[in-house]
Amino acid sequence: MEEAVRKHFFDHGKSASAEERDGCHWCQLRAFPSHKEFPVTVVNWEDEAVLPPDFRFTDRVVLGSGVEAAEDSFRSGCACDSDGHCQYISCQCLADLDDDDDDQHDDGGHGVMRDANRKAYAYHAHGAKAGLLRSRLLSSKLPLYECHAACSCSRDCPNRVVERGRTVPLQIFRTHDRGWGVRSQVEIQKGQFVDRYVGEIITSAEADRRRAASASSKLKDVYLFALDKFTSPDSLDPRLKGPPLEVDGEFQSGPTRFINHSCEPNLRIFARVGDHADKHIHDLALFAIKDIPRGEELTFDYVDGVTEDAGGQEVNAGDMTKCLCGSKKCRGYLW
Image 1 (cartoon, one colour):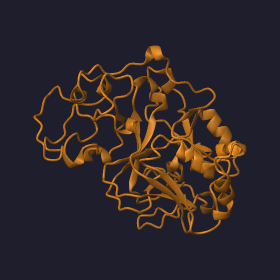
Image 2 (cartoon, helix red, strand yellow; image 1 turned 120 degrees about the horizontal axis):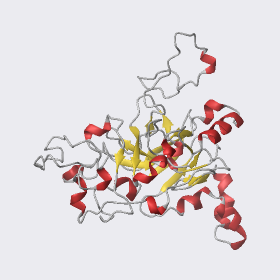
Image 3 (cartoon, helix red, strand yellow; image 1 turned 180 degrees about the vertical axis):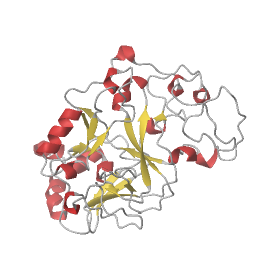
């Protein structure tokens, strides 16, 4: 790996190397707005492998052919006159939530009077746990609703955790037996937001085409994640009635693209909604479900604990993708 990048760094900055810089993974990472404060680094002490040359780092989703965001005329945000009001039923961003039934001391010891009209956002707002996902949500599959750019609240609103972006310095590293992996350069608290899974958002038909064109459809599935949290044949939104869109992170994505699977993970993926008009292209946000020491590999369950039912039929192990996580709770196969 060192030899492969040495020449680029010697020539770095020269005008003749513009094309090379455009295809440089380091240059792409350095272009992230968060780079100076929360950098992403890449190391390999195992072998001579380098990151895929046809892969490009991005910190945002890319809308593929046939995928469109909502028109501006359909967009709206909350009209809360202070950040603190974004936890109440009057906050438009929380309109789809059930009434809050949190413990009154769930904000790190700061008692909060219960109110029948109150709705809580997903995060602790006070004390040492401020900004962390509430415990009752960590073990759930509930979507997260946040305030966003169209809202009247400030960017410091406690309900804009994912929108503010990653605040953890990450390192992509070469594992001994599972290709590339990701670890944090700092300790991560239980409930802390780590990063989003981004990539190209494509139609279901295009996802199927890419699976068919791949050398192995099962390997392709490692990078494809369906945005199906709100898909329903009964939905009033025609974009949510049919097959869900999918995120393909194989060729363009962020550092989370390199996070490995584990049957006993330390992260979990949640559907996050900003503007309700864009539910069909909702975010996939990764949060820590336990305290994670600095340097421990980050993992999440690619299928979130769901296993396929063979319907009583005999399954050929050769047709399944073997799991290499090595955890005590390993299920043996991914899918």
